[in-house]
Image 1 (cartoon, rainbow, N blue to C red):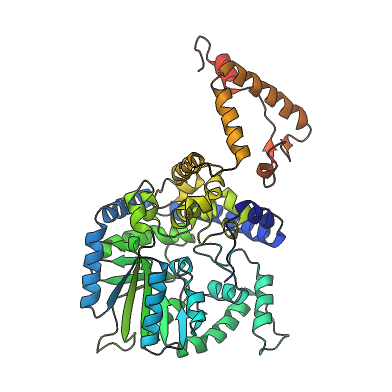
Image 2 (cartoon, helix red, strand yellow; image 1 turned 135 degrees about the vertical axis):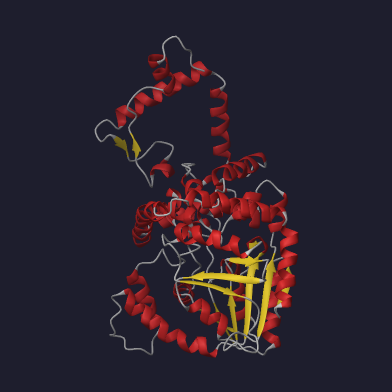
Length: 476
């Protein structure tokens, strides 16, 4: 898979010049803003459910060792195997060994962001296995040798014409003049191509939306039947999940499910919600003969012990990405890591190091949309600010930005000079933008205005207005 570099500025500039990408992102943001209020408004207790979900995850994280051990014991009692993996290398090697133990040749793989995190596909393919993505979006990206741009809708950055071209380029045994104008045409073609892979796969690999400690079960939610086929048809099922996915009880999982689909795709519930426990039993008609669960840490324990702990509540719904104006301007690939948008701006520095990912927390307007829509109430703007503080303290950000901040800090300590500068700036902006009522380009801030217009200031400063409307009181 082609992984974009962590050079956010270059990636963002390239994304803004991509007309097809801009069209796809505009549709995503428009549809999200229309759908979410409608679907959440139909559930009067939605906000109460958010509070309950936060409490569930906070409680679980506070007792994570207990619930993980309980989960392992119940998976083992059900006939499954749990493999504790410290990092990406451990997880990859463990999965390869399981595949080799059963002489696997073909792997059918369901959608899993954790597998992207550890670059699993490339590793297995390099070791002689055929790996086929079975999620429609992921399958399209595999053909194009691209990585997901959204945690829920991995191919959201593509238009249907691009997907049709991809199918024509790769499905060369089919009639070149076949119609691929409608999404249904492409879906049927992908279904036909994937059916043989479902039937021939020796191993199925999936992620898990949740792990239930009480029963040792996994929960997988999808809008396609590929998740169930990947679990039940191969003789071996491997689940890969990060340690924070565990919840205490079935009731807790059901509570979180009620906010997951509403936040992710604007649905009351996804088409498929599958709860699976271990391998098939003697009386079962189908299911895997072996069940393996990879429990991945990969930096989570360090996060759990530090000030970014709240990000471990994330249920990978993608709501923050869909609502973020920065993501809406540049897409997920611009962030360079596995996770784009606000969640990526917090999680990628934790996983890859702030020295490599320091520009990502800078890529935010701090409008608060991400925190407002997050079903788990993760304080994403606050966490991004903290990463900015760390990057600034370590002198990772650019010299020009540091000098600008130093100048602003000096001016802020001299109120009279600061107010004089603000008044001059406002007058200049009003003069330049008087005809249109907005500025298309802002001097010394071309990057900011490349994706948005700046409304022309209409009045004076806040202090001027305060002194005018609140006579007898002093501003500070």
